[in-house]
Image (tube, rainbow, N blue to C red):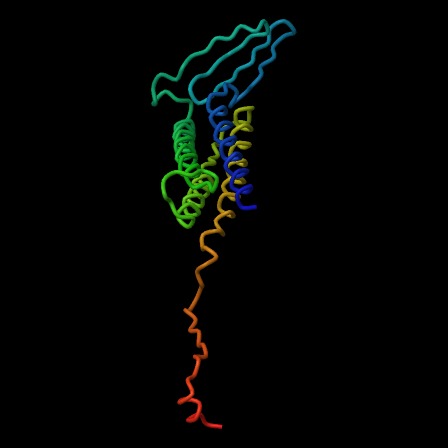
Length: 193
């Protein structure tokens, strides 16, 4: 059962990582529509890297944010940094979790260390989601969906860590076992009644 939990958790983390990457590249983080007359209408949208304006004919004119100082707000810098950190952390989570999966056999790693690697990957995956305060658009919703998948997958990876102690080892204090020894005839005569 823990192998299935690990596999589902890893797949959820991987999908969350991919959805978060798609959210970073999405153009529609901030959307505003300006309707003038019936003929002329304009839609403005921007993401973390550029701003665009599109008229009713579907022609878009985009401009990149060329300077860090020319960004529309300081929150865009913070969102850029958080999204990139989230993707880098997600990549590290993928590598560590993959090495910690029970079904992957690489080297002579013990079951305890594989469980610890899987739990570490789950914790890293739980740290991946970030939230940026931008007006809501499709990119924002994709980011939330990716973050939710990362949290669920990381939780499943952490819950599969119960296999860290092998069945052969005793927990707690070592038990002393007293056994009866076979007696010889000379000892049996000295036995007390």
